[in-house]
Image (cartoon, rainbow, N blue to C red):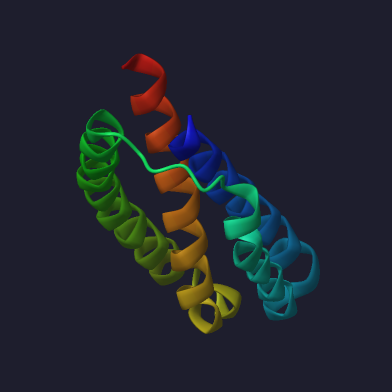
Length: 112
């Protein structure tokens, strides 16, 4: 499946970027540039109607979980007073979106 490759790629890039940010701080966000290679990982096959349906279903679940992740990031910053979270909240949010979208897509496509 073409879409599964995309979800695995997003999950991999999100985890790599989280690890790079943990190791190198804000400079680790440069690992997000791996998303530029997504077109090379995909084939030029058009998705069918079922894949489109599951892709949009994944988006709905992802958005709900992403809002919860944003609240968790905000609360973690408030309660710990971490300057690292305060200065990198956008990078953390983007990475959490990639990880959540990848995991949600893999779960939904695996069950269908």
